[in-house]
Length: 270
Ligand SMILES: O=C(O)c1cc(=O)[nH]c(=O)n1[C@@H]1O[C@H](COP(=O)(O)O)[C@@H](O)[C@H]1O
Image (cartoon, rainbow, N blue to C red; front, side):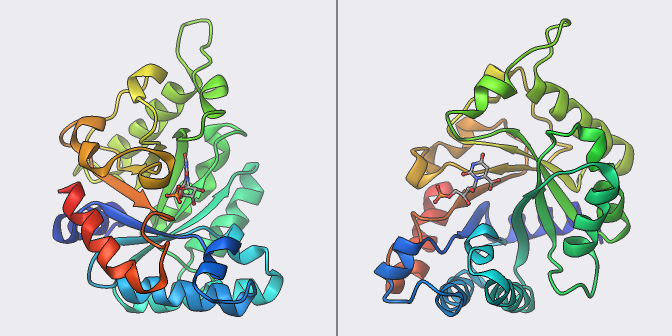
């Protein structure tokens, strides 16, 4: 079954909330955990335990594991393995992006069955041109995985670059969205695309000239800590689009409150 179909079924079953696993040093401290690979691993495993059965997707941000070196990567592998075994879809927030032949190696690392870091989907950056991501999109398709391509990001610095338009008036973000949409229409005629766009909840797609369609799933970060409200989810994105509403720090602030915070987030998103 394609990633897009699995994602649509999981979101229909458990709702749109995606729980981010971002073991910031200050969160490890607040949880009484050491700022080490073991601390990040314990944090990730506890978030997975709380998320399992409650949400469709978890999104570990890999930088928070990479900062602990090889032990951190081993910790990430373990967290990913447990999450997938618990029935969660795992979206690795790796934001990879390089020229085609190197992109292929990134895809082998993350999107290949049996690879140590195998996940269900990754985030990718199109700064080298959407075409440079093609090897990852093709491998994702072959292995029934997904890729979420940065389009209109939630951070205030993004718009200066992403809303810049070419001579014909098309913005960078709109061109990325058009390309991803076309890929999904070609490769997923049933409508459940496996290649998504990252469109932050703190921005308005239309301000970037971006039209969101039902062919393309959306990863929407920016809820909670960055200011967007889950209660506004349905007005922020058009009806009929499959949206994953990411919450990281706002549900992982207190060690014994993660499950309740996830339940509250799911309720608010409904
Ligand atoms: O690709 C992402 O996940 C992402 C894209 C974006 O535009 N904005 C954004 O915040 N993110 C990630 O989403 C998470 C947001 O975390 P919180 O602000 O704590 O909910 C972080 O892991 C960010 O790296």
